[in-house]
Length: 117
Image (tube, rainbow, N blue to C red):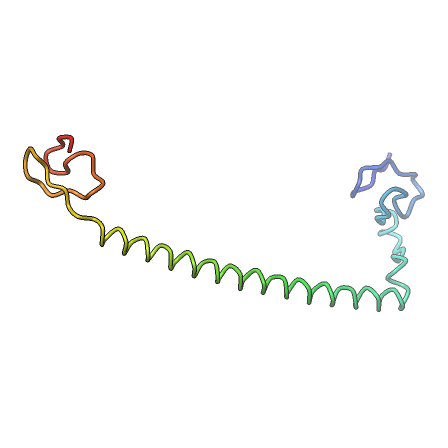
């Protein structure tokens, strides 16, 4: 029994192509059976044109994604810088009642003695 290497369909021993998916069988490869489109100059030309168009579209899509990513990354970076500046400006220190240690505004416990602020 022979099976298609692409889709797994059971093949007739004399098949050069899979009747389900069209892939050339091992027998077809060994016997040098040409792919139908490969032997037709019109199809070759059409495939070349289609591949060039697809390649160009992919390149354009990648460029759009890269540009969009750079733009978003720039906005995120601005936001992070703004947040850091905002935190620094509003971060008045809190002093521990127990030891007098200086702590950040958002601390719940003293970094010096460990007591709750």
